[in-house]
Length: 163
Image (tube, rainbow, N blue to C red; front, side, top):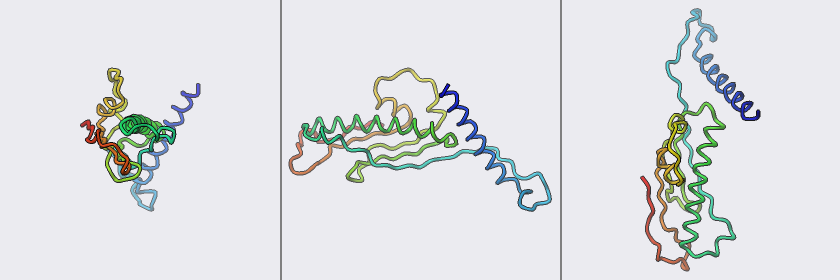
């Protein structure tokens, strides 16, 4: 029942949003004598968003460097996937999301890409890997070995990239 109510609410919000656009294009509301106004052929809203990934939990900071990097990558990918779904669910008028994710303490790029609503809603075969699901949506992920000071182990230096 709650899911149905949320769906109805989103449809009402979308209708109100489109109605506001139609009213903005209705020239006769601004003193124009003619009542024909302008008609939109296509409406699309794009959200450009950038955020910093969360660092791993403080309890996990005592793990070896390679394990910390794996935990960070796993958490960042899960956060990206959840954020994409949350943005489209809570913003029914947004059609395209351009996202950029950087590391918590630097400007190093972790992920970027563009996801549109039809791509997200397409039926896909089930994929086990979050990284593969993101790649299928159009998100490029690249995790570099993070240097966390002089005690950082350099045996895992390099990058893990998916394009």
